[in-house]
Image (cartoon, rainbow, N blue to C red; front, side, top):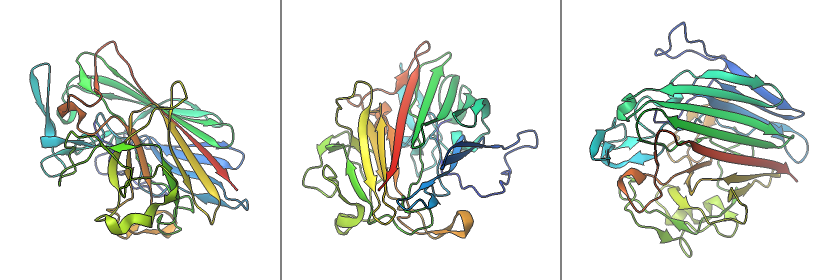
Length: 339
């Protein structure tokens, strides 16, 4: 319920040992012209996204790892938080901290398909129970993937607490490589990221509670530059939450623009969330991927739009608490072009 851990998908799909025979894993495809994507009921996970490059050649630009986060994406320091005078102890799965909601997150359960139309959308739903991974209250969750035209993918995540206030912070954890999922590293991808501040972290990647500007630091992508251009000033890559700048759009903020020169592909992302975790797959270590690909370190980019990490323990951060009768809504729109 709380996490969206990394789910590695191969075809044909193999049921994990935690999945019973009654819980059938299914795959659903959305397709319009040369634009197509596949999703599975195992974790409501995106398995692939195929689209043409500047010459018309089709490639899958999604690595084998991706998923939607659980009840609270990213980290909760000390695996605990206090809400309305009650301290909740969540499952620690990242040292002494909770990462993406615990050991068994939303990516590790079988979702139900509520609605499906091949050229339009697929909607998955899940009922998270009171006490799952230590979080309070029953929560109804749904995720809808929608194709808009032949080059846009929209994602809508909705959560409704049914009987208790609870933190909710869902995120999509797709690993992107615009050159193709098996094309090597992403160091030469050009990125513009519309966040002029970050929430710095301690040695365990827990936010300190500060909010600091990026200008003049290796975290500054306010003007487009190659992702790997300042890696020499970092320990091992990017894994940090950016505070997104306000946009002229009424409901969405522009998050990022990514381009890859060989394929000519460009991806633009908008969201209604206040933050985005930018991650350069620093933990990939020669993992076996789809179609025989080997994913080495920095093989993919992640843009996890979200509330701020560990917000339940930082009152100055935007609140993630959702009460019964309220509805959590998280929107993303991805636009793909090639020139």
